[in-house]
Amino acid sequence: MAQRLQFPHDFVWGVATSSYQIEGAWQEDGKGESIWDRFSHTPGKVLNGDTGDVACDHYHRYVEDVALMRSLGIGAYRFSIAWPRVQPQGHGPVNPAGLDFYDRLVDALLAAGIRPFVTLYHWDLPQALQDRGGWGNRDVARWFADYAHIVARRLGDRVKHWITHNEPWVVAMVGHLIGEHAPGLQDPALAVRVAHHLLLSHGLALEPIRSESAGCQAGITLNLIPMYPASDKGADLDAAARNDGFVNRWFLDPLLRGRYPEDMLALWEQIVPEVDPDDLAVISRPIDFLGVNYYTRQVVKHDQEGNPLLQVALVHPPGEYTTMNWEVYPEGLYELLMRLHREYAVPALYITENGAAYPDVVDAEGRVRDPKRVAYLRSHLVQAHRAIADGVPLRGYFAWSFMDNFEWAHGYSQRFGLVYVDFATQERIVKDSGRWFGEAAQENGVEP
Image (cartoon, rainbow, N blue to C red):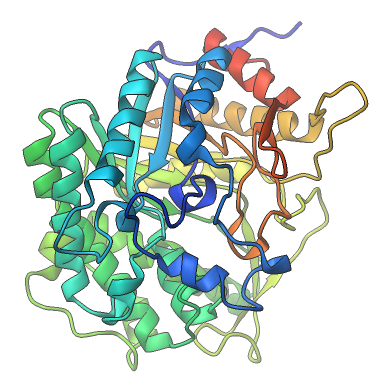
């Protein structure tokens, strides 16, 4: 048997979820409406008309879910706070019952020996703020900082790892350019303005978080995708660079270099928003870590008829694909981590999401056998280990996701979980991958 690859002694093994995808209880205990409540109830927006009204009912079953994590030997749990549960209108009065829920969840995690990693925004903006312009309204950046202050004041004595935003690219571009996510808009200039306000809100939130959570670590999570040209032709090389600017550098550069990428500013001259003189200094305030969500790579070619903003098209090379039609490409994780280390000198990195959707079923023995997911997780952890060996300051890995959940516009059709959820009965069944991951966490290593 090959020798197990051991991770550093303080390496964090975690699982991740988000509030709208698992909590349910969408109208309970004073919670306000979110943009995903509104969007999922709009006919035609989500596959099969699915909503997050109940989801995994985690709001009522969190004790059971934490016990399940503990039984698997999971060391950390990344979850998000539902802003409209805490502030139903998005600013102003606080809903005590909402804060109480997260207070109880944090206490339950700590009692189980599980470290909480809190994400303050995972896409469920209060609808009341959307009605006032949403992230397109610069004032929302300041209101987000106020919300961050409220949550950190309540939980900051026990929570020491804070993530301001999850995947601002998705919020801006999938929500406001492509229109596939809430609020379902298709406006290029608005999308770029939203991206700027999200980054600004991140910078504004760092100070109140740190003021209320002594000795904490604070950062942000980006979805990052390595770009590969479809050929060595100059046009394809340029297309890959443009797509890299669109997905990766438009967020990495302001956060870590204090400026937007020059090539993208020139390309998007007509839609770049006005930036106040101090904005980039706020956006680039030092972070303690960068969260990386990695699932796949993109192979890109030039296409005159493609997206008018970029003139690119994606190529699907032969290989293994998940049911999300994402190529399984673990080497991309290593290359991405090395790039971040080399080009951006990030002080610390966490893989805050990595996982795969497959068509899981419960067999006659009541077992969920998912060897492809085990192989996916193992191969990516091997690449993470390789990056650490080559000097990358990678501090932890969070599998997406802890359990099957509401997968946004795909509804309940895609299963990413380490734990199978029967959405009719809310029964949880640990998949083979969940047991495998738990063993890897307890052994602090994987077999190559």
